[in-house]
Image 1 (cartoon, helix red, strand yellow):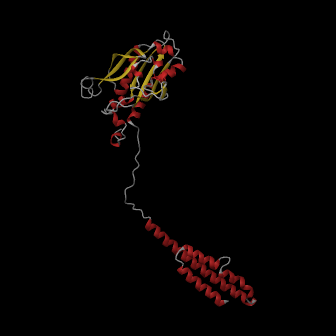
Image 2 (image 1 turned 90 degrees about the horizontal axis):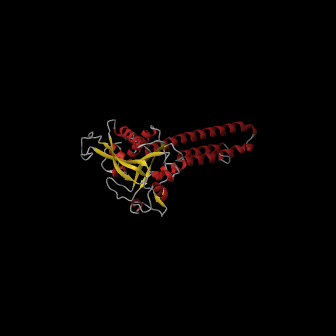
Image 3 (image 1 turned 120 degrees about the horizontal axis):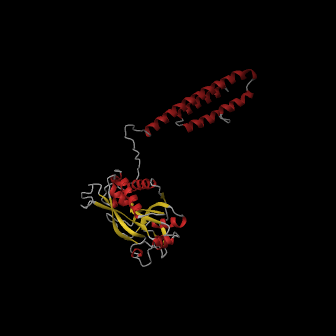
Length: 339
C-alpha cells in the first residue's frame, strides 16, 4: 500500500508538471482527488490495513494529499500568471496615442433664429401654435379668401395629394384653426415647415419654414401692426433699425403691405449687402380681411386684427449674412461650426 501511495504521488506530480493549461490541470485534480480519484479510492481501502497500521497509513495518505494539493495550487498560480501575461501582451494599450475627441453638437442657425423670434413675440404676449403640414385645401386656401381660380392654387406652385389634400404652402391655416376654436382676443404666431414647387437655388427651396403671426381683438388698427413689427425689427436686427411699409396685395388681408428694414450692415447708406438701396425686404403683412373673420364666425363689425408672415430662412440669411440658402441644408460642418 505504501509503495502504491508513493507511485500515485510521483505520477501525479509528473502529470501536474506536464498538464500545460488549466483545463488539463483540473482533469489531473479530479482523477486523483475527486470522489472516484485514485487517492480517494486508496483511503477507502483503509479497511484492508491492519488496525495497528491504520494511523500511520492515514498520516501518509494525508501527507501525500497535502503535497499534491500544494503542487496543484502552485501550478495553477503559475499558469494564471502566464495566461495574464499573454493577455496583456495581446491586448496592449498604447497610452501615448491621442484619445478620441467627443464633438458636442449645437443648434442649427435656423433653430437659433426661430428661438429668437419666439422669444421676442412671447415677450409681447403671443402664443406659439403649431399645425399639420399635410393640410386641407379649405384651410390652406378657401378659408383665407383664395378662391378656386386663384393662381396660387395652380399645381405648378402647390404639391397636391388629391384635390382636397395638399402639402401646406403657408402656415396661415393654423390661424384659421385657432380662430375657429378660440374667441378673441387672439395673439399668436405659427412657425412651421411649408412646401412649394420651387426650383432649388440660392434663395429658393421646395421646403422651407415660415413664421406667421396674428392678432384679433377689438379696436385693432394698422398703427398697432406698424408698432408691433417695428419693435420686432429692433429686437431682431438692432435698436437703430428703421422700418417702412409699401402697399401690396394679399387675398387674406386688406389693406396689405410689405415691410422693409433699414440695412443693419451700412445703416441705410447703401452697400453690397442691401444692393445699394439701404433697405431690405423682410416680410408681408396687413389687416385681416373681413371675409376671413366672417368665415371663422367672428363679427368684423366688432373685431379687427392684423397678420404678418416672414420666412425663417430669410431671417437667418439676413441676421448671419449668409448669401446662399442651400448652405443651411447641406450639413457642411465647416459652415455649421461657425454658429
